[in-house]
Image (cartoon, rainbow, N blue to C red; front, side):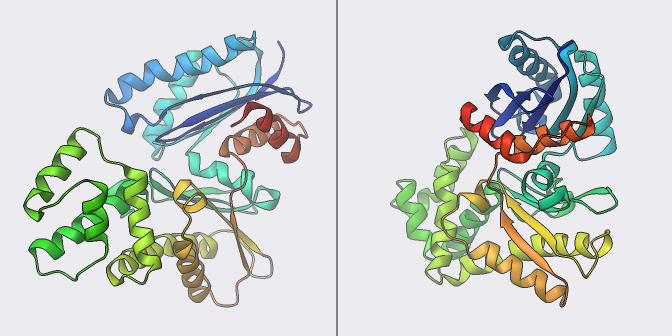
Length: 331
């Protein structure tokens, strides 16, 4: 047995896996698409086939088996409830993993981005989830279950809100918005009569450019578009409320800085930074006098999984060593 450290970040769009030795040497890595069963056409049945193939295939690539894994940490989108956690844990045991930690992928941003592995991580990518690990070691997740938890974030949410806002202008005497011309141009629409049919087709055929459509909302907000700004304020209220709740209810002492890491493509890759500014302003206003530092995640989330697995196994691997290894993997 090689006692390997095994970390997995499974998202709703892309997923990464990394393998290290107990002393921090990079062994190998792999990437695939979504590992969130909620994003798969075949649901959990497809997930039960895709996950083992990805994990075992990565181990085989480096000449190892699951028996060579000393400890593993899995951060998987779609693991939000106790039932989902138990079901996925059983699948991991069936694959052969015996020593592992399983959590929602939002938790990975805490060890990956917060000094000391203590703080709050807000994810804004394919979906929206906020998670915290406090000074006592308590780990709590809020949001992440769509309409049930009132998630006002994630690229799909921004796109649908932009599309709906333009429809409101077209057919409900809604407030005019710059997003109308921008969406018409992006999707080659010349007549408002074609609007519903075109977007129904694109959504049904998954032919909608989510990234570009998301940028339209943020670009419009940057120019001062009132409709776009209101939508971002709604999203900011969602994130700020969740962050403030975690910061006030968990063990984050007032005399110490509470670190908040912003992760996910909408936060880290979106050129327009209006939304993070709105969130920070709301959090500071809600908890006046409490010390906060907001950070953008500058490491692949899988780095948090590797660090977490190493710590659980009792190995002292530094984040810088992990980052250097992942540069080799080009993750």
